Length: 556
Image 1 (tube, rainbow, N blue to C red):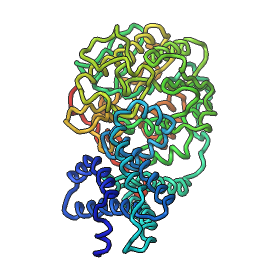
Image 2 (tube, rainbow, N blue to C red):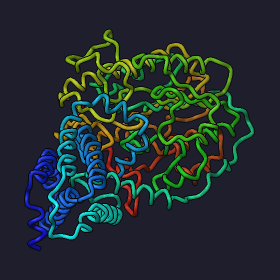
Image 3 (cartoon, rainbow, N blue to C red):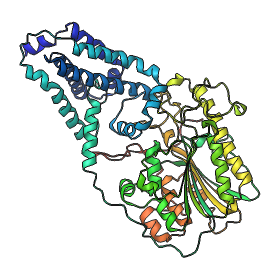
Image 4 (tube, helix red, strand yellow):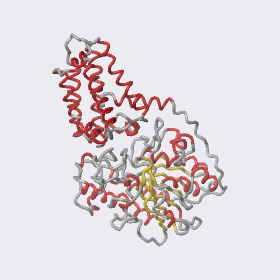
């Protein structure tokens, strides 16, 4: 082993690599702190030094083109991965990586907003590429083939380890090839994802023609206990008032499907259940198909994206079932939810029967500029004027951890994008012509429990607040055929998103018995919901879902 050791002794080239790795030390230390037991620590350190050894071996490849090709691959991988980790404030797990790839159309936007987080990774990458690309000494005591083989051996080792651990095993390692190992897993999954063909609507329904609109409003990043309907300290939502002609049935704080937007939205659209959510997403009819089969006009209002961009796992096949696809690229971010409310009033007051699904702007980070100055009731706030054109970004890194200012900015955003939004609808729409279900895709973690990082949701080890969302039914008082009161008290603060799809089908007058058998109980039934959200939605490579309680804990 002496000859291997001698090859790893620091030269000026090796010092560049050492310095590059050293700048990522905070992640290595964080990983060591979280490890339990001597064996786990030994395995991690062995892998760490193996990665380091591969970088050094690669730097000794004689062919400058091959050496610099690997140097470029390592440097780009390190830069992208380290930047994402610094933005997210946590390790980039395989599920997180797949989410980032799925939203790749918005990566440039994200990087434009987080240029400060890119400085250290950029220095690391420059040092790494210098350490590898500078010409090495030409005398070796090791056969050159070992140098050429080392990156491939590392890639095979990482891919195999991650496969056996369901996508885990790479956290805290220098990410010179981690994205490529994750990519191998994605290729494997795509080749083995033959779940089946999507079925048509097969549930029977009554022959009667529907006489009112059915509207599902999916707000963005709204934590249920920050609204006045669920907390004495909550922000005015316009849902806690008495209206002469409108009933508001508050189901309290519900558990979301996931703590991230994409999983929640796609499961809601396809009626996933806790036991079969992946099968439903891939093979069952969407709510668009059920609505069209009910002779309803289908309308999708997406206030978050522009220029026809699809999000939340929507594809062109699904879009073909949408009669009216509306985005608001010509409206400023701060006014988009208000424009949505105006559109909803127009739809409700017309003489057609529509099924309408809304993705609001809501209160996703950055919350700095999502409200006008005239509604700034909570102070002090985050510095304004930098993010007027940004709908959402993946992390809160830019606000420097001042959670008090963040929460005040969040409350002001709720005043505008929830309170003013519903005030417009409930004072101008004829709610005898519509039933609205209101919820949000996930909650928010404002780090009241002292956890590290800057994320508010989508974390791999979420706190309960990430899964706590509002759930409200709104209808005109003349709509009397649905007894929302009967089980409301029992279901309040005990329900979840999984009851939404069967509720929609019941409103569309499909056979109730069959609905319950396939999709579970609706909000009209007495539920037996476990009140949990899924922190491992993908459940990939043999892993299981991780169910977290959306229990009450930290206060607003």
